[in-house]
Length: 202
Length: 251
Image (tube, rainbow over all chains, first blue to last red):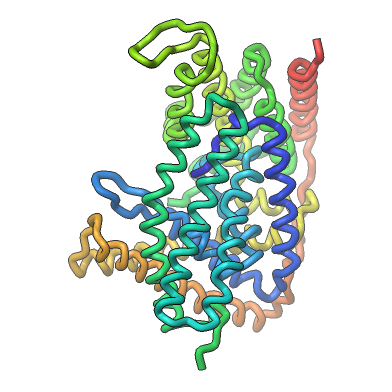
């Protein structure tokens, strides 16, 4: 969920911008020139995949996949997700310019957290571990992202608290669906292309 | 789908230097986002209207685009009168509608849409490649600029790839429903997309290396500020200072 322009107060916008700039700087430092094309292509794959709407009852939800992106990209998720959000802001007017920092942080910090939580488990990619990773990536990725949006709204003013609660509730089904999807994706990647995950099975 | 719908055009706005556009859009967005006075929003609206007239875009196209991204803000506007404390205008059972909340919600709606529209008029008319180029000249880290170039290039390629995969599962009789099978199918689709992208990125990188790519793009073309750009920058500067003075004055 993107926060729109013009809602959050200056301190929240500034904090988001500063944290994101820090994250992006760290991510860029870790990014070799050689890996730029690869990172960009993966980041566009996440951009396209996050536009997929999966059915949920009579409605549909779109995936975030920031947990999965985090597992694959680590700190580079910051620049990668920043670019996805920048492109969305320019191409579709989703999100915006002043909230770009906040929105990047909301998506990318959980991605990095998912990386830290899941990478050790993936060193031994048993079925159980993959399942745990999938669930963790969804809970951390989507859950934290929703929590951040809700907290930022709640900090802005008492009047936003009901909306913040609504945002949290709306993220719950997405967590469940993403847990399934991430688990299956990870299982598939481990079997077919483990080097994407940076692991050697051999 | 990722067509840059507003890039085509011959207007003054379309031909402005992207660096000027980026800076003006950024300053405008910050000022409007931080202002809460109705009077400064009115002032800001004049500037957006001025840009719109210069851009010669069709109003229905712009409105259509802006309205489709308003769902979050509309949700807020609807909720605000009931959650913002203030003088009760109207009671509906346990819900009390406050005048202050109504005004507050309306202000948010207005602010948000002013920024969105201005971004559309200034940035969506510039083209991503031009913006990336402009960011380069504004000293944004070179790796980030390269990532923008490559990412924008590849979302089109991957979108096509995704459509191909989507068509393939549809041809095999897949119809999405709320069940585990559907989610698994989407997961396989996403995994295939990632793997194909990864393989492609290897091929692309090798091909680029063969052609002498050393990790950076040399820039040959440089932006040149024309008199028109300077006039536009001057007008915007005067307007933005006025807006800033008006919004942040202590009295």
